Image 1 (cartoon, one colour):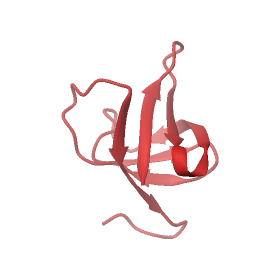
Image 2 (tube, helix red, strand yellow):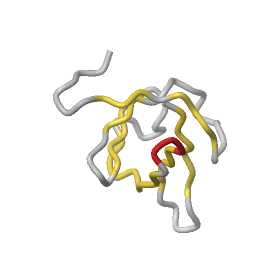
Image 3 (tube, one colour):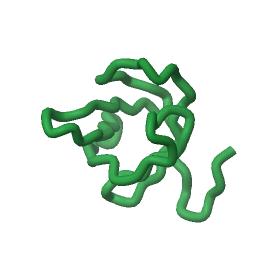
Image 4 (cartoon, one colour):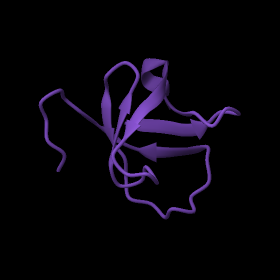
Length: 74
């Protein structure tokens, strides 16, 4: 699914999923640079983000995969 990742003026990361008209803060990241790992949204959704260069600027739209509650990342 297409997900826009951005950082607000307060430095908080958020994810926007247009198809669901959903914007949620990112509350947990697997990797400090966020790319190539899992992130957890405030609503509990877990997204697997693609690996990207750590110097990638935000905002950016990426193809992410939503994991089910008990699903292990590929």
